[in-house]
Length: 189
Image 1 (cartoon, rainbow, N blue to C red):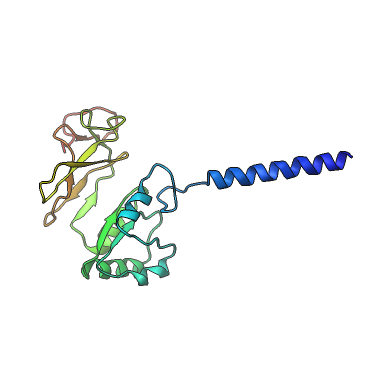
Image 2: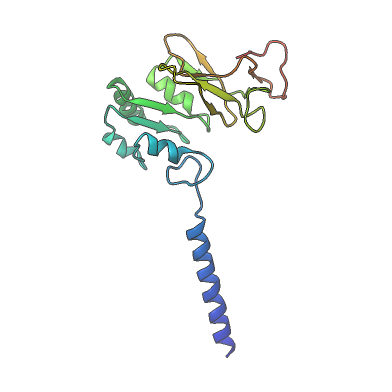
């Protein structure tokens, strides 16, 4: 009798864990399959993007198209070469930097821009707090102002020859020493 009670208890617990996993799967950050906060799934849907799970899938990149890349590890030279060919052929690369690997990709592509790596802060034009500044997206149609929220964003250091797509407000600054306030000498972005 006691073994039947234990069997039923384990069975109920197993079904409960399976139901919880099905109802609320573990979402990885920056995963198109994620249902969480990052918005990548919505962006991929709007851009008709196809997720690539492995480096050998980069051969399937075809222009015109859009590649959203969040490099968590260093990319092999052959992968950055495939990405470079994709961009030179007219593809669009949306590079998000969360792990400090974005500059490696930019350098490999010979791009005249780098992520600063320090926090971009905007005490006036922000979402939840000043470390989540809003950037205004430039529109060529003049159809109205669009904005996006940067989740602990940084600014770009531009050498020249690039077009701005979005910019922070006049009140934003680079918090180089990460002390939460603007200090003399810190850039006003």
